[in-house]
Image (tube, rainbow, N blue to C red; front, side, top):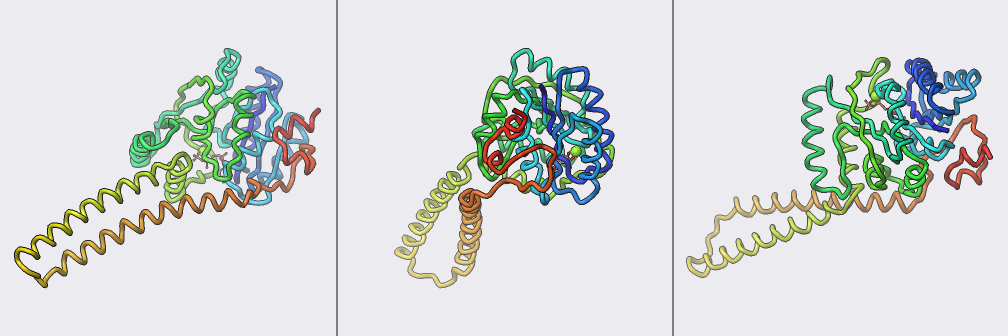
Length: 321
Ligand code: UDP
Ligand code: MG
């Protein structure tokens, strides 16, 4: 069986079309289930999901008590999915269901991750340029490899899903996690599709924060960089102090020095604040991890679960046994 996981946040306009399109494709493929995760939508998403689930036995839904974010929604989907393989895709039809047969074929060929990679046709030029630059810098810094255009649209084997579920961190950066678990990958390329209904939930500040998450989640290089930078600055400082010291020995004390003092105070102050921020960012993460809060809270679902189940992975499988 194959599980299709669909995070939905305010997708009332897309859900019906999506359900139709995906069912059309899946019925010719393999036994399947659709796991919709309503991420605390404020529109009629949940109502529509319930409606669809009455008519279609393949439809399962999980509804969160509030908006926990797409990462949490995907995690819930992975925990509940009972399939031997899992496909994660968006509800807005930007991930074309027509790619699925090919993805499943490669899964049968033995690949544990089949990744659908989009090109950037139709994206704003500015966003494309910034993304390209980001990935170039990012791959220099982080330990895992991230590829531009590769998102969450992918098929994962049961082995890969279990590996992901074993990573229980609170701050989840899936793009990095997918790459971290490894396994054989196969990449399919597809043409970028514009969103048909509703609006994207990504604003520029959100994207910037996501970018920073990506860098901080996967390594301690920013901390290491701070040390090197600090060492270089200290070294330059020592040279400068020696220079002034010998000048005083040779020419005596010279009172005017306002510019150099202010300049060094400002520069060092700025650098220190930046690195305090870097350190704070890591401490913040430790703080969140140490609370061990759940990633999401379920308000409503048509999958039978008990409290006990919530603490184990593969909830869907368990409930169906
Ligand atoms: N999504 C979600 N929770 C959120 C934001 C988005 O579950 O807090 C879902 C959304 O419903 C969609 C998918 O994640 O199915 C991708 O979101 P969107 O289309 O807004 O992102 P984009 O395609 O612009 O990257
Ligand atoms: Mg989208």
